Length: 267
Length: 347
Image 1 (cartoon, rainbow over the protein chains, first blue to last red):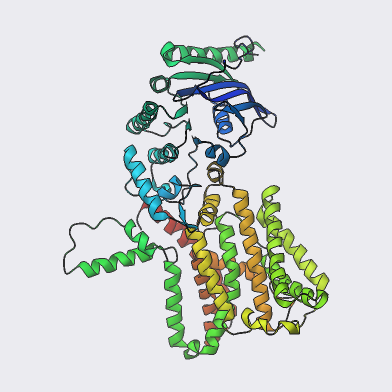
Image 2 (image 1 turned 90 degrees about the vertical axis):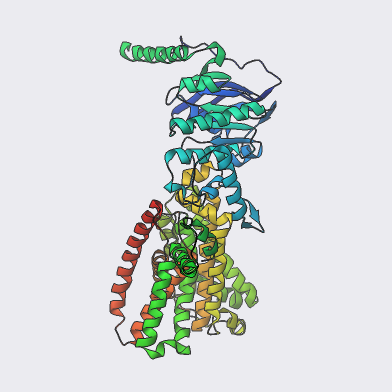
């Protein structure tokens, strides 16, 4: 029904500095098709904004890139080599880390155990709580997150603090590719600025590449080098941030909405 | 309890410089608060109070014979409570553990008398069979997404039926070759409690100080979140079912040696219900995500001290059931309430 608004997107020409390439990825959940044919690339040191309406498949795409879901078809190239992520652990071992939309925090555990969840420091098979506590404190201080004690259960913390912990966990994992799913969702202006500064720092170092899903186009354009728009399971728009505007992005999304409405009412 | 020293740092920083006169009191208060923050604190206080009460009310309570009784009543139930704690913490339950308990000494006897396997190897094989049943419980639960309540309800009947069929529902003598080794496994009066305490401390350490324990808590606290963090929650759950089956088999063998007979009416649902009751009274949440092995041991100790003390005071064992029931419900209420307080930062 929306065939005329999109032309078939083909993979961007291969480029030597692509750290991650996604070619013709599709994903179905039973009868529901979440992704039909996604092509996407991420350059070394680049911050890529991934936009799209609710239900467009953004989170599904990110969960494929971090090894949580396996795609039904298509392939992923990491630094030019085809890879199949067998699990989250596998993707992580290859330098990809993710902040999930739901944060993946365990309420019953302390801040520092959450920050080292599934990559705990151990000595003689016992948890090195002292080392983890010290590092957690250090990371949060470096980030400028105000959390009184890393011994607190995360259930006690505010939404913004929880989000900061989830972001800190990934940023300090020494990953080379960071996937952030709505990292600003539960944040006030101050905390959001802190996360944006953090991403800016990473960008300046030039070593880490980032994909950010966000709803606030202004923030995305400010921080990202390039933006992609995901609609109906495909990337329909790919431009450097400097060549587009909040206005243009809004227009595209609203046009899509009108189109869908017309299709539904027109039968 | 092992975390007391660390958790001491959790308290708010002392307000103002500690005065010379109040230093000791402040330290005592700090230590007291650190103690009360422990999940096991309330059940520990109850246990101590009961021991003191019965010591005064019934002088026979602290005789060696009676202490042996209490320890033998506590130990096997507390051993299977360890497995139940791990399962409850990761959001599962094992109803079949008491039937593994009943089956394992029969298996040991079959191996020795029918297959001529040496006693030690037969004991090891019987315990491994418990582990195998546990792994079936776990794999069915995880792979087919059957609630563990149903999986283990089903395997309970299967194990029970298998035990009755193969034994013709007849009690058996322990193999005579096994008498010597039996001293290590329940014949010697204190052997059960020694096994029990060693296992309690080992698994308290596993739950609070190892990745396995942390991932068990994470799986029960937030299953999706744990999966997203890359934790293999299926492996954790299956492993904890294996633990429960293994401990069930060990408890059954200890009991057979203690009673010098292999009894088809041993085990069953009763020890499992007591184990779950002890876990809950000791501070383990049914909803998953939190629990304590030490608390479950103390919970079982309290239940058995109550039962024993009533007996010594000449009170019928019938009202004991009422106390047990009320204790379970009160423990659960206080558990929920304390958790809420802790979240609010009061304790």
